[in-house]
Amino acid sequence: MGRWLHRGQSHDVVERQARLEITVEVTKLWLDDVRPAPPGWLWVYTVDEAIGVIMQGGITEISLDNDLGATEPEGYKVADWIEEQAVLGKLERINRLAAHTQNMCARDRMTNAFRNAVRAWDGQDGS
Image (cartoon, helix red, strand yellow):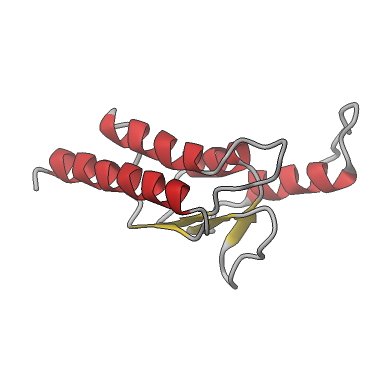
């Protein structure tokens, strides 16, 4: 299947998009712009990539960095999105939610969002 480059897009971006579209079996998601993912984890670099993969379903573990570069949205936005979708009942449970960011304020924000998502899932399960 061929891919067309959009204006200003590098081959790296197109290859990453193709990799994300065919990744169905991966269950562990790692969001970070610099630190490589541990073996067995899918490495994504942006908030949009992370949300896109989560929306495909099947993610059981996630670990987020916050500071993704000067021009990218911060990683806490993924945690906020997970919380919102869990509360709305639109996201299947993710069993392990972690923040590996060194930004302590963002880590606290992510942890609170994760906690709220788990509460929402627990309430939906009747627990």
